[in-house]
Every structure is written in structure tokens, then in C-alpha cells.
Image 1 (cartoon, rainbow, N blue to C red):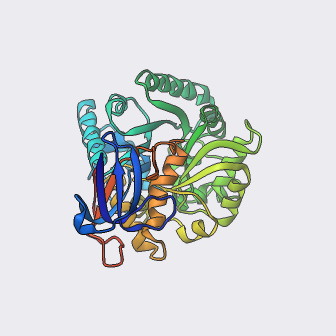
Image 2: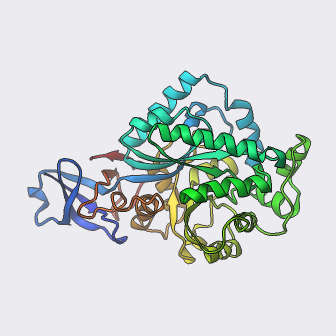
Image 3: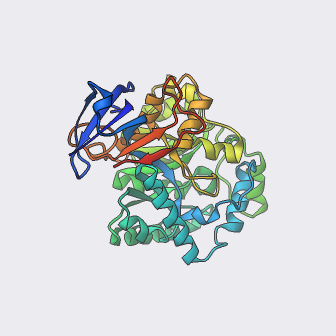
Length: 395
């Protein structure tokens, strides 16, 4: 048995910490109990900081780790897509695997216990298969031309089967409305829904919304200039278009676990439409990526007011300087100072575990669970993160 004490123990059964608390765990990491220390001076191990369950990185593209430092910031989504198209294959397979292995190891050492990861190829499969981190892989598809729909889905299903051969939990997932024909959005979503999970880039940029609602803007122009088809103009937020496409193959309500990623341009109207039909919907925010590309953040205050189940991700090293969950949490705390560290940790741990259907093991420090323990250091006098805060795995 191990006993670890700290200034703050976040069990995340609620948002309040146990001040000067402890957690006892079995040698295999199973939580035995938590409580308040009677005398911190007698504790065998006492950390000046916060101890929480292991993080869940709810949106990552770890296979893009070879792109670190290659993208310029502030490009907007149209410019970012241009960079992805130019640089995605700028490294050989050996370097790609070495770089993603380094980042997987780093995330684990920083306290990430699980990850919802996007894959467009099999580069990451062998690494994820042997990692102590739990991963669910979303096989992401693109394709703007309706006639390519069947072939794209067939290719994704073959890649999904390869992931299964490695023992990975995997399913097909649509990328976003602006990179897919209506037919492909529906077909790819049907595949994911059949497995019980969807991940979808939703309302990430103003350019995306302009194209979907009005057929205008830089993204629409780029698509037309490249000879690509564009989705139908709906006059409605793109999330509502996505819902309409899913209703082609699935009656409401949806019990499947659906992750809507980014949500920078989320509106109350669109959120209400999603809540009306999706019974297990989660909303991933990737703040540092959003600042990197658009210099914008999602409407977190509105999301909290609506009671949305928020999760946290890092996105990829094509749109972020690091895959560091502690930096994402500090960014959120700085931008939204009314939000407590406990609430942000619920997003980064418990809600992510619930999305992945791993809450029986991960997400909270409850007896019988094995979530891992992460230390967040360099807190200020009120227990909030500072610019010097970092995270490290204890268990």
C-alpha cells in the first residue's frame, strides 16, 4: 500500500478538494480510500500542490507529432488546411513513429491516463497498442465528392480492422462538414454510431460557418478554386446541418456517445438542437489550438450556463506547441477566471472518462478505481494554477 498526501486532493466526486488530504492506493494503483490528514508533518509523502486522477486527453492527433514547429500561427482554418495539405507527408514513416512515440511517453509521464485519438493511417497503432495509456482511435475520413463516398468508407473500415488487429478500440468517424460531401457525413457517421461512439470537429471556425450558412468566405473560395464540391448552403449553424445528416440514418434520440470537438462558434441555438436529440453528448475544448489557428476561444461561459459536459483536448502538434494538458488547463483558468480548478479538472478527468465509457476505472479517486495520480505543482496561495504550474505522474 502507498499513501500520498498533498495540499489539495481532488477526488472529483464533486469540484471541491480535500484540503491537506491523502489518498491511499494498492501497489497496483487501485484506490483504497481518501480523506483529510490529521497531521501533515507525520505524512510519509506530502506534496505542495494538487493531486488529481489521471487526465483524459479527449482530442488528439498524435500521428501528426512530426509537424511540431512547422506551422505558422494565425492562419485561420483555410490557411491551416493549406499547411496540412503541404506538410502532412513531409517526414518519413520512421521519423513519424519516433516523434509520436516520444509524445505518447511524454503525455503519460505528465499524467494522461486515456486519450481519444484521431488517426488517418496506421502509424500510431503499434505504439498505442503497447502504451499503458488507454486509447480509443477514431478513424477519420474526408471526401468532398459524392461519388467517392463508398470507396472512402470502405478504406476507413479496412483501417479500422487493422486497428482491431492491434487490440485497439476503434471506429470510423467523420471529420467535419466542410471537408465532406453530405453523403459521406451520413455514411461515416452511420459506421461510428454502430460502434457506439462518434467524434466530430464542430463549429471550429468562422470560415466554416460562413461557408455552411451562406456559401461565402475564404474556405468556400478555396474549395471552389480547387475544383471541389461544397456542402449545401443551409442558412443554419453547421452543427444543425450535422444533426440533419445523422437523422437520415438514425431516429432521435441518440444514446451513443458523441463528442463535438472545438465548438469555437457554438451558439445557444445549435447547442439546444444537439441537446434535444443527443442524450450522451460531450463538448471538447482545445483552447491552445484554437488560439494557435484563430486567436479565438469557445464560449465557455455559455457552455457552463447550459450545463454542457465539457472535456479537454490538446489537438495536434500541427496546431499546438505542446501536447500538455496542464497548459490547456492553465489557459482555460486564465481566460475564464470564474471557473474553479476543481471544475476544470472535472472536465479534464471525469467527463472524458465518461465519454470513453471508462468511468468504472478512470476519472475520479473512488475506491476500486485505477485512474492514476497526477500532481499539479506551483499553485498560488488560493490553490489556483500559475504560469509555472506543470503536471507529473505520481502513479
